[in-house]
Image: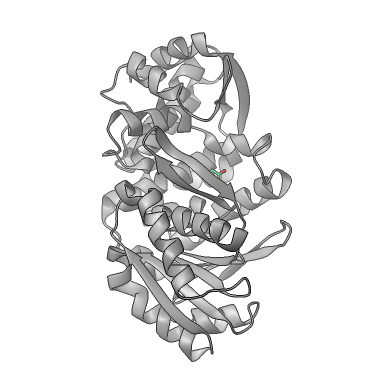
Amino acid sequence: MRTIPVNTNPPYAVTIGPGLLKDCGARLRETIPPCRMAVVTDSVVGALYLETVQESLKAAGYGVSACEFPAGEENKNFHTLSDILEFLAKERLTRTDCLVALGGGVVGDMAGFAAACYLRGIRYVQMPTTLLAAVDSSVGGKTAIDLRAGKNLAGAFLQPAAVLCDTECLNTLPQPVLAGGAAEAVKTAVLSGAGLFDRMEDGGFRFLELEPVIAACVQYKAGVVERDEKEQGERKLLNLGHTVGHAIEKCSGYTIPHGHAVAAGLAIISRSAARLGWMPEARDARRICSALADLGLPVSTEFSPEALAEAALADKKRAGDSITIVVPKSIGACELMQIPVSELLFVIGTGWEA
Ligand code: GLY
């Protein structure tokens, strides 16, 4: 069991280890006084873990209600958000109560956004049940829903009051879902440097205990979020691989999962960086692509550079006539680079071919 503090204002702790869901009530009582807890989850996660969580919360003295919505990125929209908000209002939750986001990235993003909107902001707790949510989306307070125009285009920053990451949930994840989370872990390893990257190389990640890898990713992210909570500068680095990744998701009509799209996006920008001379050691790009491929992740895409550039330019990372991309200069040294939108096609096209 590991606990990582996130020193935002207010601060909170990310606890990682086995058996946390069945213990969640007692754990939360260490920081959250008795109140009503509204558990928000989806149909898949609810069937697996809702009862366990509800029982634990009740045993710890919390009043408990639950709201379940159909699983899937296609439901991360205004309709579901509206249903969650109406549920919170029907249950008469007040500002002293708490929402629990039980699930993967979609649940965490949307329940977090509901917590940020309801009564102009109530407390919420993240209980990530996928690797992607564990290593990335449950930490840092980014909440959002998708709009027809693109992913995560409406949202808010609201830090959770606590994150409880039960590693036992990850044992039963289907391989492609686990691989999607591993893509975000490789991204973090490329940002943070050799120590974590070395451990993940050659598919070794598959044989490692997940807890130390999750802890290393959360530790790195916590530092970034503490220094730049609202993504004014350094936090943009966490978007490594995401400019092209989001474009791939969009071009696929969101049928390609986020982690898989980010893997291909990370591979493309790494090859671009090597081929354009931004990454002096081209071997680093090969190591990144091999690490992704060894995890069963894609390192290329069927969508043309033209289609990707067009989709990427609708992204919120665009500012007027320029767009900020994250360039890996080496493993452990990534930089933000502002380029004219007219150059994005050239950058993507350079790294597009594997
Ligand atoms: N997922 C990137 C961030 O939290 O900033």
